[in-house]
Every structure is written in C-alpha cells, then in structure tokens.
Length: 160
Image (cartoon, rainbow, N blue to C red; front, side):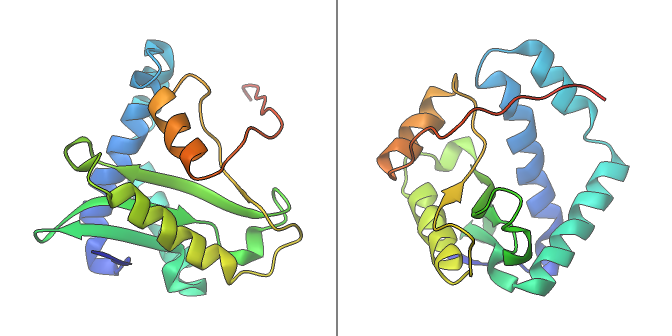
C-alpha cells in the first residue's frame, strides 16, 4: 500500500534513506563513492534530512510517499515541492527507493505512479520529470527506461 508520509514514519524513513544512500556506490561498484555517502550519514544529517522532509510535506503532504507492507515501510518516493520546479525547469523526483527484499514485487511501480500523480498536479515551467541516476546503475536505468525516461543532458560536479 502506498500512502503519504507521516511524522511517526520518521525512523522507518530514515532506515530506508540510509539504504538508499549506502546503495549509491555499491550499485555501481564504486567503493570510494560508497564511502563518501556512508560518511555523511551521521546524527546531524539525519536530523536535518528529516526536518527537510517535514518542510516539504507541509507544502504538500504527498511530496513524500511511502510503501507499507505488513506494518513496515519497504520503500519511498520523494518528489520535490512545486516551489522548487525551477531548479531543473520541471518536476524533480529527488529519490525513489525500494529495499532489496521488496524489489520485483511491483512496489517500485506503485511508488512511481504515486510520484507521477503528484507531479501531474504541479504547475511546471516545462512538462517533464527529471531525476539523477548513475549511468552505471543498470537495474535503476532499466526501471526508468520502462517508465519512458530518456537521458537528458549530463550532470557534472566538483568538490567545494
């Protein structure tokens, strides 16, 4: 079942967020990247992330939606609020994650449909949904291609 995030989901959402972050490097075999993401997951980051989730869901409770099975969360989708649409001139799927045991069960499809429902209600500069995904993450890329996503541009980054 997919539903809107509630404040009492915070501990479970954080558990899933950790899984998302820790999987970023491991899904591509990049140990250095995995170490960087693991290193940031301290109590301060947890507190700030959950506060940001609260601010976003105050704007629209459906910006963060969770998948629940047997009384526990198994995945989530986080669409940035409409007020941030000018970051990429469209809607932004900030994160979508399903824990490993629930992959291949349709949960990711339910979360994507829920995210698209939120996005369709947004007033956007351009009618598109964007997200950042590693080209090397074959499983994620196959999922997004199945949903009609195509590569658009190329992101670059530098350390501060």
